[in-house]
Length: 208
Ligand SMILES: [Fe+2]
Ligand SMILES: [Fe+2]
Image 1 (spheres, rainbow, N blue to C red):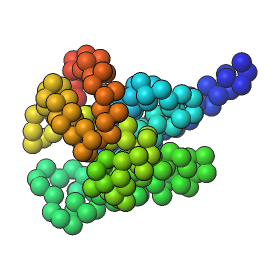
Image 2 (image 1 turned 90 degrees about the vertical axis):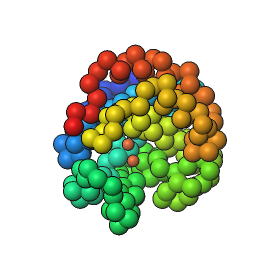
Image 3 (image 1 turned 180 degrees about the vertical axis):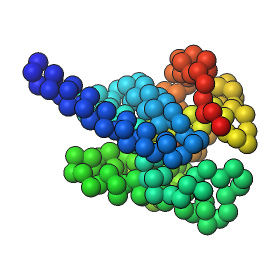
Image 4 (image 1 turned 135 degrees about the vertical axis):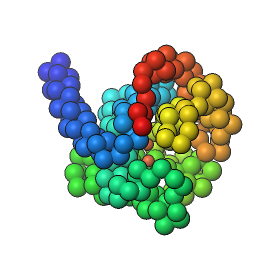
């Protein structure tokens, strides 16, 4: 019991620090306001649906909060650019998983989380970045965050486009099952999206 309480307090303290770090990131990147916490909520639900427990599930949840922390190392004019990105700007954006990894690897306690963050833009078919890992070579937490991240991006407004409806978004995710996304994670999302739609479609997302 005492051990459980200690773990809970430690986890809460840790969680608060993570939220502060993310608030610092989101103060810089106007378009991702609230993005990290929604991705964290969805990733937690997916991890639970997939049967992850304890520290494994906590790691996925915290990694999801931190997945875009590396964007702190990307110039603001690129993060907030309204038009199409030039190839060299896109190449800079694609460095954010590695930047995030090196930030988190400063702490020995965050190593597992750093590895998940490093691989959150890998794809099931091996065409992702930074390492082009294939299928289950990608850490499970990163495969979970990949799906949650895509869902939140599609259902959120951007200055240049309206948000996609949840129905159209899930259709798109299903089309990419076994292509971009882990089929098992997609099955989990298919069972959960109505709950997410209810939670977020009333709230105001991405004011810009
Ligand atoms: Fe990202
Ligand atoms: Fe993201």
